[in-house]
Length: 442
Image (cartoon, rainbow, N blue to C red; front, side, top):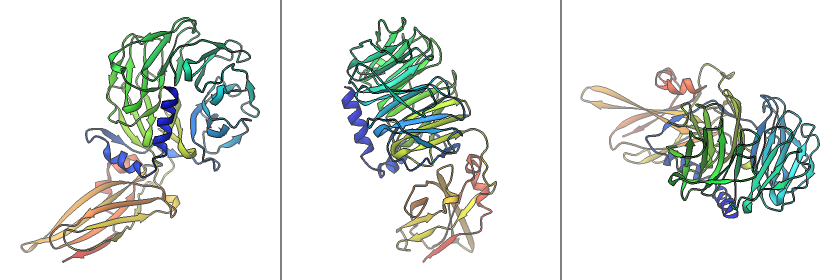
């Protein structure tokens, strides 16, 4: 099952960037949405998929991915440096217990360890050739790695030796809260140990029957979450004895979940979907990154700072603190193409300068049209939030608008909201913007 899950994920990624718009438009109308706070961090030109991100503190972190890729930052992600892993194999997961000591695992049973912050990485003998998908350490000595073929490996000496703990279930993710208590998920299985992995017990529930689970996290011995394909989010309040489905508002596969406390958590996945909860998952809010790329891993060092990584070297950063942006929105005068005739559809589009690329990932297009009713001139205003995408010319937006079957004069203008607050209040803000593109339909 592990190989099939890996193949299915790859199939989704190869489907192409055009699907992003479909995913965005296809989300349920009843879902809550938010933008802002997530910003693009552009590392060195690394285009390999990044599968995992781990931070030792608010400044020092690593991302690992395909073809042995390892990146490191010491300034919270402002800049990233490539580290030599010494392997061509795909790396799927990384964990650090401090700023110096960490591990990465991946293809063909690969386990790497560093004791100097990644300056050098050494290969450890795992005793396995199975695909390892997840690794966790509770201290510098004790850790577990899980993967395909039911593989579970444990070390009590920092990885000098690894002992096999076979589960019988192909696994995608593992989480421990102490030296004894841990969980692992994969496919439609959740297993638990209370003796450090000597024995693993399946947890059964109709809530995750026929699911395909990719990630699990726990904040204590009772409270945890698991996410997976179909937008599935599961929660337990009793250590996994029972699991309850939560409504995610998406059918996109979710690849990673992380909680900073019992209330605040994040999940990321296919199509760049980002979900957040502030109430333990009772409700989830949809966020969209400025770059809507497939996201494979998310981590937070505290409630205010987090990172997510994914396809094509994507790294994005969340900060709850105000960013240094202009208090006044940036105006964009769009172009309009197409037949300027009644009932026809025109294309409203524009390209922004790179310095105006929105942190929110959106522009707001205001469409104002005037028409005569008797002796009076009436004006109707419509506002549309449109996603920004990358193009060769720069950050771009496109919107198709159908003209009315009557004589009207149209004015189109767009602006880049400086932050989420501006987006929330854009009706008042846009009224003050004078620049626009006008057409007259007779």
